[in-house]
Amino acid sequence: MKTLNLLSITLVAIIALAACAPQPTPIPTIEPTAIPAPELSDIVDTAVADGRFTTLAAALGAADLVDTLKGEGPFTVFAPTDDAFAKLPEGTIATLLLPENLEQLKSILLYHVVSGKVMAEDVVTLPSADTVLGEAVTIKVEDGKVYLNDTIEVIITDVEASNGVIHVIDAVLLPPQ
Image (cartoon, rainbow, N blue to C red; front, side, top):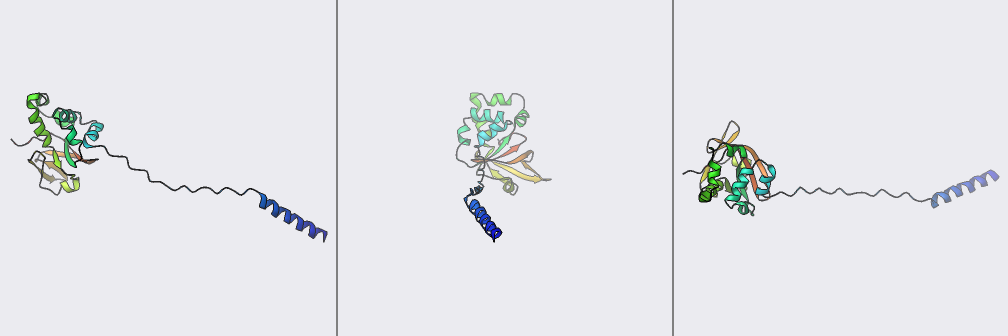
């Protein structure tokens, strides 16, 4: 009986000690939070940040079109790279940047802009697109490539901006004369 009492007392003591012991702190649950998508820049800032459009950016500034393309839009811009501008005859860019030729420069630049956001999947379904200059560019798909006015290739598509989209082209579009 002594053993039974001693065992009972020991069990009671163990239970009492266990009850007095600190309870483990539950591990807090952390709810996953969505990482917000980075905010898109406007068409001008997107082109400038890319680094391949310094000539285009300078021309937009000279033609006083920067604020327009930073505006609400949406716009679709067929953007020639610096390499595309380099294909123009020597001296063409310098001549277009002269104050007396700014209207011609502005016309050329506006011929690269379409009102609205036209993604590549839509571009390939169109026979042409009306530019904000009021002149259309023709569109054709051949061998899986997209061409404007038959010879100017769209080399990169769907560069999204907060106020539209940029499609990169390999030459400068010149409006019909």
